Length: 137
View 1 (cartoon, one colour):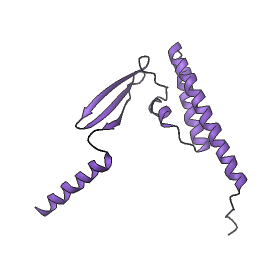
View 2 (cartoon, one colour; view 1 turned 180 degrees about the vertical axis):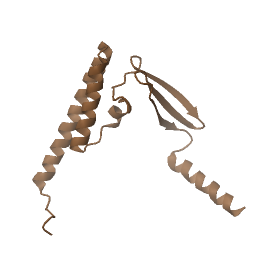
View 3 (cartoon, rainbow, N blue to C red; view 1 turned 90 degrees about the vertical axis):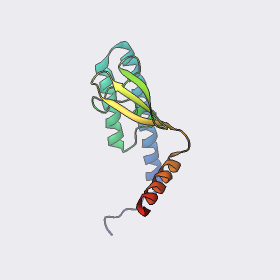
View 4 (cartoon, rainbow, N blue to C red; view 1 turned 135 degrees about the vertical axis):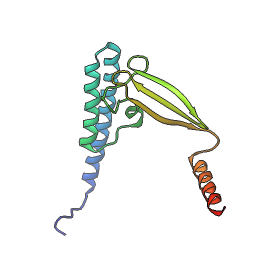
């Protein structure tokens, strides 16, 4: 058991502090990226997006969802609706989806926004019931 080390309270406090600092820096870089896009400095916005990704990977901290959705997964530029991103809503059945298109590289990102008529659990359970009905007949 020479390889196993005991995690002390001090180590956990340091990890928590690193996480807090990393998230603060990601939020700051995101705000700077938005300002850069509004000025027209797309290279700065791309660099800030890359730095956010790098901080996340190096510290092993997830990028907050409200930031992650606005960074293009293809060219890493920070997207701002009306400047370098187009945002549309689309209804597929009961689900409402948000479609975001990066105008720099053309990358399209789709995510589900609202599920009407119950949550995901209800929708999944209905799907299971239909499968059981299909097997019996």
